Image (cartoon, rainbow, N blue to C red; front, side):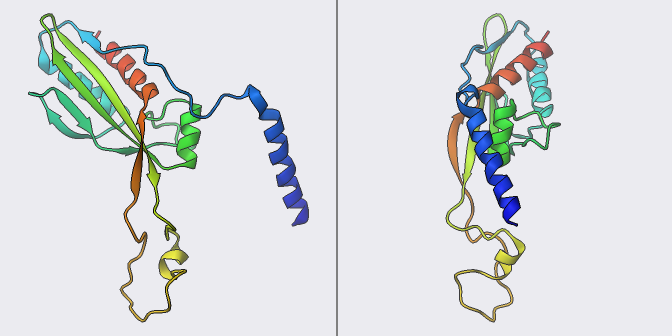
Length: 189
């Protein structure tokens, strides 16, 4: 037991010393390099359907579509971690590591605006992290035997969290926005 603890501490110290200033920070800010995609066509149905097709590649499920306002809004999707490489909504190794260590969800809003010569398609991706209020009793033992309540004879106790989870906005996910915009450019060729 002592040997295992010593090995873990030595590896942690070695990793901390070797990482140093040579590693990149976990929260890299991606500059917004690309604005809305311009599509030179008069076929609104083509623009709309290809935007929805690109969203389904990630896969984001459409929560709300309004063609008159030109808005496609998706449902929130929980970010994939390091062990889920087949999901495409988490862009980059740093973001996947962050999603592995913290519950993160994303939502995408696509705005389609008509212009004289075609359409402008813009993407906004929002990221939120989970904020649990106090102790979350999510384990099987924690849901059955509460730590701070006296013994009760009520057999219909609530199993799971005592309160709904809250979410804290982390702003926009520029890496996901850029990836969706690049896929839209390819789809509109």
